[in-house]
Length: 214
Image 1 (cartoon, rainbow, N blue to C red):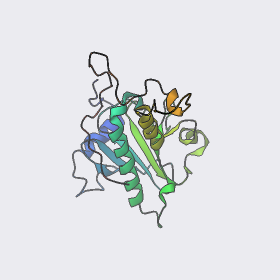
Image 2 (image 1 turned 120 degrees about the vertical axis):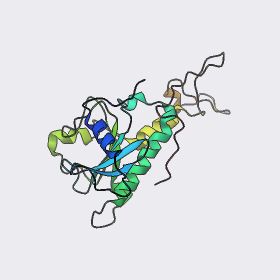
Image 3 (image 1 turned 90 degrees about the vertical axis):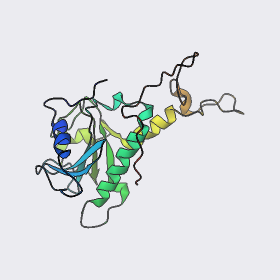
């Protein structure tokens, strides 16, 4: 699948512009709306300053590749999701909110299509939202995208992928066992055919190392 930059995509433009500077030496570069906080070969994170959802801080973490949605990812992209969570927590912890903020106040996740943030209306370039406290700046209509109706916490997505690739579908010593994993279609560490061909979907970003973090 082609994940090259898409002309006219706002996030592709931000990713490109962030790549033209050294974030370590010039962290306040770019426009007021896109203060770059993190940039590596996989992800670009910026502080949303024009339309934040929380008065305590709102960060957007975009994939550098133009990946359409979370449904493009496979179980082999689990390290990528763990990286997004770790980097989001680290960046939220680094924001100056005036006092220490417990990680229980950190919210990291995705907005599920067809829902979208009406102030950041990008639906075909995968990005994660991370904010502190309550989404107290959204208003009623925008707030739906950050409610349980549309919000998909990254921890839930990671947990579901880990469960779906668990090898514990059949456990010795149990008869008539009922467990959540039994309801997961094709549960197993990998999938393939009898002749040895693997059919597990390839990772969007192969050989991705997990960033050490919270």
